[in-house]
Image: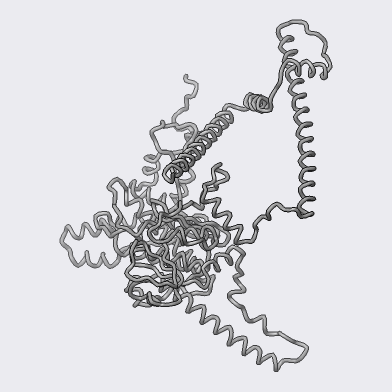
Length: 582
């Protein structure tokens, strides 16, 4: 009898009982593969990777608990009902029973994903943590064309555009935007909503190419869930700032494709209404206070709640809110209007553009900056700066107003640095990043004083020198102790080796004598000590941890090589500039 023989009908154990293949799961649930895939996307069930694959490596495995979780889902009954409905309609049409077919078409079963949102995200903070892919997908479909063969309908695209603009309007109104970066893929944004960082990608305002190797059915299934999720998130966020959702937009601005500006005007109008109502209520309460007894001052003032006091801004939000304060911008026709309108208003600026529905004309004398992307202009105003769009994004990432000389029209722009990269952690700080740091220090008035003859500076220098001497002494003592431990360890290994070989060894000598002999014969450098420590650590590691450590060392070596390559390029560029200038 084989070792792992199991009689027929006996209960399975181990991975054979815990995991199930996809084909077995489809057969168990009695649904088609497309319905099973759709149900898994809605419920958030993903394939697993068991250590021991019972059916082989070429199968996709699911946990049995997840399949039982899907078995009792009410949506499964809805999908079966829709399948039966489609069969009835097909049968009526094939029998040419038009009356029955028309009646059936009016009674098409529908479903909603509201309960799934509540089930997968019990708290609002959970929905915010899972919002990155949702926003990226919705912004992507908002920029796609309607294609009937791929079942991408115009109604879905309009819905995605509305949801994305409502999200942008909230971020812009509450000044929650933190970072923005223009890349080849699109524009990356990062906002901080209720303490959670949300990052998403929006495509450029260009005609999108639809690749043929993409399964749009799966993307549309994800989009169906993400539309519901973003709708609930927008509803909660708009109610948190005392705004009605969905917002009612100006039909004239909506017809002129100025939806984001219309949403901004809607939020501002609601704020003004709330402010007026608060002033009226405060006036009435002040009149009532005159009629109250003297021993009850301010008895009714707790009834008034100011919206701005309820949502107190933190320091970073205040800095973002006042970056472009009292600054007026005008956008040319050739620049991306929506992204610049979103970014500038999120940092406190006032924006207009060249086209219908603009708040003010180009001839307005209050304009400080005109953002253009053409080398020649038909008419120039002396009272404003003509700059390229990159200046706006560099300013918001640096949190200061950068000088406009390098961003003038027709000039070669400085490098657009990513705010998502930690230069110090990468080991290479670009030259323009150092320039921005100096400008930030100057804006905060943190310029270091020049070395002079002040008495305080002399005392500080002397104290620093004394601290350096103490630190050096401590380091020397630590190195001597480390060397002593290494000598003891070496002597122990030698004695252990002789004992294993059956050889007699001399009695233990004094450590100081061994130390003196070693100082005469060998001179161990700190690098050698560090290397020996690493080797001893590697010996005591398990195989898994050793491989992980080796992979980390390889990645560190690649990072170091990349930094050396960048520094070499930088030196070559400087040499070429010197040669051309000479």
